[in-house]
Length: 100
Image 1 (cartoon, rainbow, N blue to C red):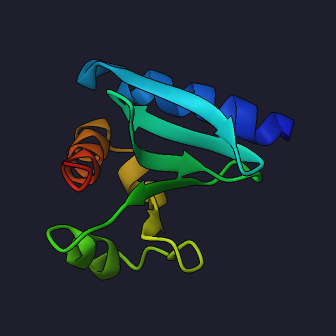
Image 2 (image 1 turned 180 degrees about the horizontal axis):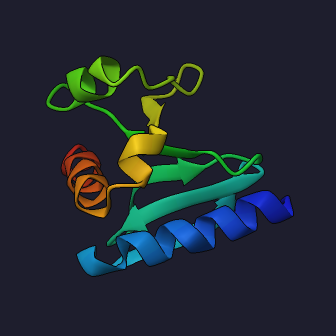
């Protein structure tokens, strides 16, 4: 666990607080981000943010040029999305929907 991932996870939880029911868990050298116990996001060991993609939202990530996290179905959150709180919440909700 690096200080970067701990701090980043805390920041992301604060940003996503309006959604409600968001939590994090230390894992894989970073943190998993959960909504009601289902993982929809992650913070890697360097503090980068990722959200889960599925059939319904993958094109959104690809159109934004988001990097995929290895072989996992998670894409990096672009900086412009992180800076636009309403858009970040929209992207997070789309990632949450992939867990249902």
